[in-house]
Image (cartoon, rainbow over all chains, first blue to last red; front, side, top):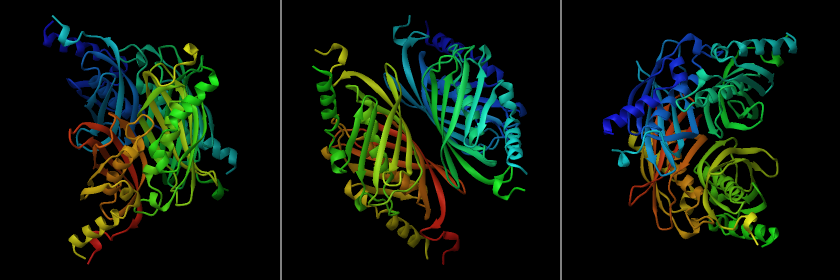
Length: 146
Length: 146
Length: 146
Length: 146
């Protein structure tokens, strides 16, 4: 299996996300240890204050986190996320989440996750996320491929 | 305004949550500093591993957190949530989130949030959440009512 | 090896903590998944505001967390701690930290940690802590003992 | 008061830290929203596993966090810190902590904090910290000076 095929298989797996589809969120960048996800948020995603629900902001960040942490083809599951909410988002905003790998060890890995409003670039939320790396590879490791 | 009317106004405000409606989540208990929220989760709420999306688990916990922290009639906005994911949830599970006030000060308040599978009682996730308490009361304080 | 000897060996191991000794912190309770630690804090433990250093409050909580998570005889190392500071502590306060196991799985375990002022019982800080459980048992498991 | 005098007064205030002195920690860089702190850790700072106590790693990071968040002359107090421990540190290591402001608002501010081993540059811990900004300025704001 060529490296290009491997990357395509990983991207195909990560994009099969029913809840992402429900939110119209798309993966715009996916590379080793890095991902960017975006979605335009709507009235139906508001909370009782009329601003975008914290759960939506978390979820868009979580999609970038899941994509980045699974980008190596090995199954990674979230153990811990700490999110700091900075600014409210409002219906019509384009939310852009970016996750960047800070450390990857044998058993755990750590990611920095930011969510910004795409037009202004203003910070909406900033998180740290830690995954547990399972023994399972959903796409075989590159070293043993071919 | 009687205390009963006050509680009803607070509950009415908190239940006007479009995203909660989209997830069919309901507030089952709402008292001062305490709330319980539940939702039966479905296939459309899964991630690419076929388990319930972390964003859904966060969101159901966040609804309990928002309800408990706004239960006094004063607007509270989430600053920070730290979530530990313990067990995967699967389509068909009834998720039950409970938020309990640990401390309430003039400017901030702290909540313990648990999400369990309703049938087995098994722990799905456990969080701490901190809010900033705004000057705004969406229902006037009891002391000044009448 | 009797169960009593096992508990004594575990306690002996956990109490060999040079930094705890430097702070005059003592383990007052140690049971399976539970620990209480206390220390009277002093002028030399202050920060530049004249209140007790956040690092001292964290450390006393961390000692309870380490004791509770290692109380089974299996080496547990901290992966993540989220601490919420609630009230300042001052020189002369007796700080009492309590850690209680919320979940223990094969690879990770989760603890709730509170630090209170011993006289008034007022909450100083509240934390969640997650450990990774190593393969190493510093005291052999009870099942295989004798 | 000149801007230079202001910076000196701020640095003088921040360096009056008794617990930092006990650990022989020094502030190597202090600028607006930025600080670097270092300390060589010793046998007496170990836990019962013979590695450097998590409380020491937290504390050195916390010193950088406190310096960066108070660097504007306005009193900032820690509300929340989330720390991810990545690698153990050992006696003799030079620990270098760096805190960088990610956001500063009217009431709260957010910092990214890393602790590395100074020789190898290896990541020991990574944190997010959030402060509450008090009304009190320990050095008057620049705008009103002179």
